Picture 1 (spheres, rainbow, N blue to C red):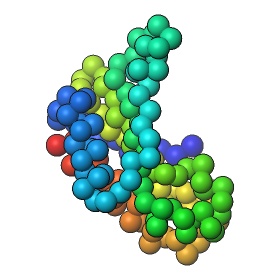
Picture 2: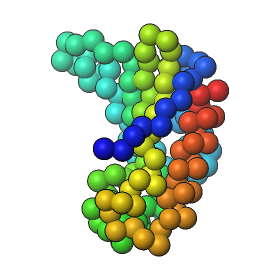
Picture 3: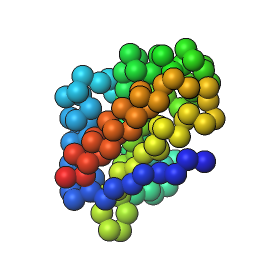
Picture 4: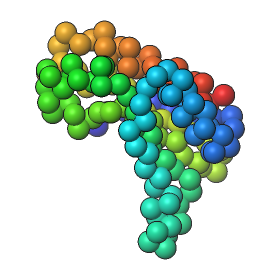
Amino acid sequence: MAMMVTRRGSSDFAATVERLRGGITARGLKIFASVDHAAAAADVGMDLAPEEVILFGSPKAGTPLMRSDPRVGVELPLRILIWQDREGTVLGYQDPRELAAPYELSGHEAALDAMEDLLDKLVGEAAG
């Protein structure tokens, strides 16, 4: 299992999510979906601190990877998890460069590096 890169945010959960969404759309990327785990828990009568996954990306970046190895589609689009704990808000993502080992992605190192750089910048901006 890939290690998660995490960064603690300086704002509350809602502001952090808003900054992340703004950073994604400002770059012309598409938000494909978001999963509100706390809302899903509430739907079944359970409590969960705020926790949301935002799935986003660019078909221009992901399609070449999936052409090389369709199995990598289970890892795409990119995603960032935002959650709240006792100390505040945390953002996390898995380093996409780790996809090179389990999938046949030789020749795509530059794209994977660019994806990691994008994730790092988005999380840094959203963390404040």
